[in-house]
Image 1: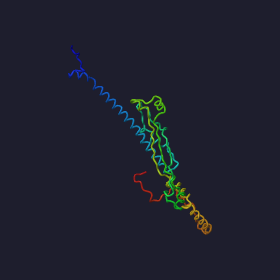
Image 2: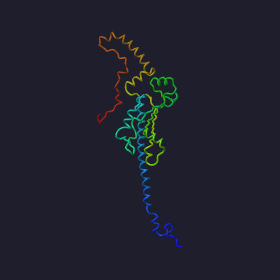
Image 3: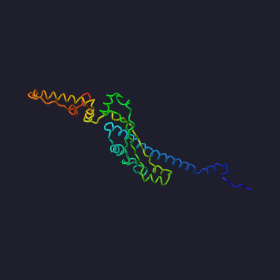
Image 4: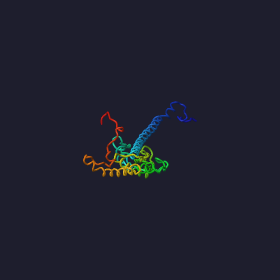
Length: 262
């Protein structure tokens, strides 16, 4: 009885080549699919890393803005500087924008206030009075948090309704919410201008206003006594506002000449 010829049992090279016909093409397609998925994944990740980096910069900007004004909430500046313009046009595979600047929010929170011993000047009675009068007392570290939510509501709902997608479409159905924060100690005597400095100085009784009031009172007494003698000499009356007259004047040692022009 003759056994039927089969390439499955034949050791001939021609049969081996016949069985492997098309295998290289399949392997190439598999590798190409893996590389394509990797390329899309890297591009997807880098977009969100860039958004996260801008959120970090924005949180620093917001935190340091509080050093000039504790009540400042520069959410408009943050959206314009860090999430708008030609340099911040993040899009998905379909060319749709990933993030609307209106989806960026800013939150300010304070940590627990430092104890008396940790405050400037410690627990000394005069230091406590000066610290409170000049508004130097720490009220807690401020935490500026910027939240960027690139995902779109309709896509988020579709993702929940349809379950977890597979393949490249998964990159279009899930956008992570990115949050970055910066903590800073504010309220250490910083002022936004000359008038703010004078207001802060004048509000301290121990540091300025009590002594200034005594000097003003004595000066007015002297003025009333010598006014008749000074009138023939056309001498001006004394000025008893010793703060507002210095608005805009900065000591020369705190200035420098800009050689490059304005």
